[in-house]
Length: 197
Image 1 (cartoon, one colour):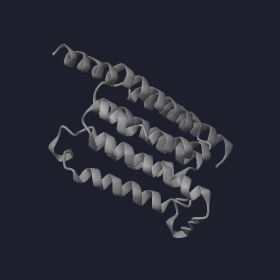
Image 2 (cartoon, helix red, strand yellow; image 1 turned 60 degrees about the vertical axis):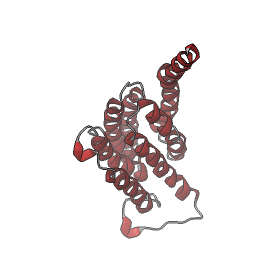
Image 3 (tube, one colour; image 1 turned 120 degrees about the horizontal axis):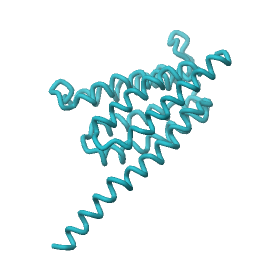
């Protein structure tokens, strides 16, 4: 990829970073997922422009995942099959792009290569967030999705996705802040009420 495309891609990633950072500050599961949908669109473009095709393909599938999970109040989106459809789609996408290319006719994976194992990390990350978005409780969404960030952070640093790496650092911080603001306050309140009894 040329330098211009690479730097524009990093700019698109910066916009995705801002949207992703705001996602875990939302009070409801639906709003978290909607912010993540917009972030996935931008990260799909970002990763494609910097040549990190595993990340691009996973985020592309993530757009559809977020669209389905944002509509979990509708009957068609409540089918548990969606959870497994997306888990399978992420696994298949990861396998098809493990060699860092989007052309599966030249698929050439070397399991002696560090890059192959690095490419697997975002697949695990997307699996964590897929399970998290299936949950309706915002506090549980934050807890279950948290392990995704270290997976993506490693992948982003390896592929020099500075916006992606920054996003994961900010996301981890944002999730912790949200847990302190909403989740632990709620737990303390419950404990105080139990003590009164």
